[in-house]
Length: 199
Ligand SMILES: CC(C)(COP(=O)(O)OP(=O)(O)OC[C@H]1O[C@@H](n2cnc3c(N)ncnc32)[C@H](O)[C@@H]1O)[C@@H](O)C(=O)NCCC(=O)NCCS
Ligand SMILES: Nc1ncnc2c1ncn2[C@@H]1O[C@H](COP(=O)(O)OP(=O)(O)OP(=O)(O)O)[C@@H](O)[C@H]1O
Image 1 (tube, protein in one colour):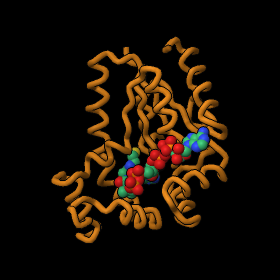
Image 2 (cartoon, helix red, strand yellow):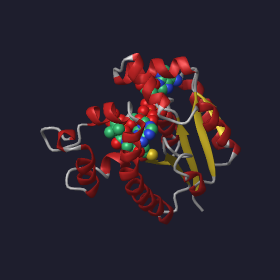
Image 3 (tube, protein in one colour):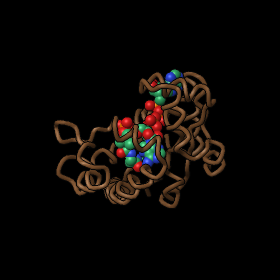
């Protein structure tokens, strides 16, 4: 039986960093952000619907979605974000299901289902357990601004577009702290694996 861990956390909380540690320890990782890119590639139904909803100017010169521009629109307008998620959500779900079924078929021991909107979209039903990555709000803001070159206002808008960390941590079975270095994260992941005999 494949053990499925749902991994979530706010934007720039460190989900990808945690997922990499799991992968280094033998787990298979499914990344919803990557799937979200896949379902809107050139020629897909996803990109057509986005073009219909947001207009042709949402495409860059090469025909791909101008992600920077779309991000600016949706993260400053809740209604626009709702429209985008209504398009991408079902497409992402279908592809996540396909990838998960594939790994289960291969009898993977541990699958990390990394989904930013895990609880918002009800994916906890797919998981044996859920884990939330959390950190001090100030640090989250700093890391987000630094990684994505965003202004304070832009970074705060992206954080505000998501469920509060408090609520997410309450819903999760396990909370992992990313206030310190990557070494501290590694220790927490290994402890989690050892406690479940998954290492
Ligand atoms: C708005 C888009 C184009 C911005 O692209 P960009 O390359 O700048 O960011 P990227 O995709 O790497 O996402 C970065 C982070 O933004 C946050 N985020 C993304 N989508 C959403 C959303 N619908 N609601 C809240 N936060 C979101 C997540 O924390 C994510 O990890 C992109 O995020 C997107 O297409 N989002 C809609 C798809 C979706 O719902 N993804 C979430 C998967 S469950
Ligand atoms: N313990 C840490 N110490 C210092 N920097 C860190 C630490 N963990 C993560 N980072 C940095 O913080 C940023 C956010 O981390 P990461 O990309 O893993 O977050 P994420 O939750 O996957 O983001 P997103 O929600 O946007 O997909 C990255 O630039 C990463 O290198």
